[in-house]
Every structure is written in structure tokens, then in C-alpha cells.
Length: 125
Image (cartoon, rainbow, N blue to C red; front, side):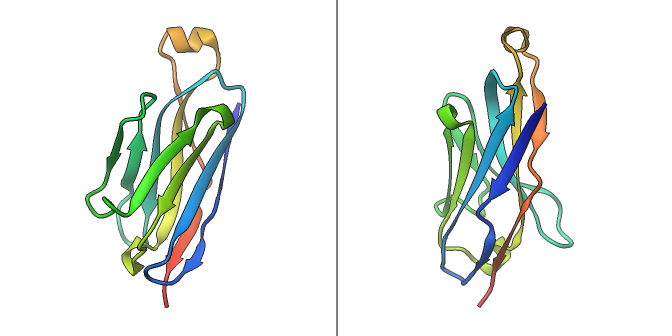
């Protein structure tokens, strides 16, 4: 089994910064695509940022230039650096990882999608 533990959320003033972390533990051979998602009250689930194994990134238009996704493969940890935060960034943020538990899973392209528990980010003065 794979567990994800998110941290780094909290209350921040507009214009401030936060860094979210998502640490994976358990039986892990390889982590493939990674994404950070968010959901605000009354709004649909939204992909905020993604990063591939090769390091290619993509971002929602609303966060481009302000958020940065990164990964530390050695630590099985992913990060979301959020700068110039706005009240509309307020949401519960979730990480999602595609994990191959074993070498056999990896060579057969069998990846399990695992979600974090979510961390609340509130941007308010």
C-alpha cells in the first residue's frame, strides 16, 4: 500500500507564499505523473499543476507564473510552491501520484493512482 501525507497548508495574507509538500511512503518502485489539484467550495475539482517523470510541467492558466511544481525522486516527495497568493486560491489542495509498486508493475505499465488527504489553503486578510 502507498500512503500520501500532505502538509504546508494554512492561512496566509494576499500576496503571501506557501509551500505544500506531499510525501509518499509504502511499497514504491517508481512514481510516474504527479498532479496537484484543488477544490474550492461550490467549484469543480481543478488541476492546478502537473509534472511528468521527465520533469515536464503544466499549469492552470490561473496560477501560471505564481506556482511551481517540483519533485524529489529520492525522497518520494512532491512540492507546490505558491507565491503571490490571491483570495481565489483558497481551496483544499490535493496531490495525486501514479505509483508502480514493483518492477513488474513498472515494466507492464501498471500504475496505481493515489490521492493525498488534502490540505486547506486559506488566503485572506
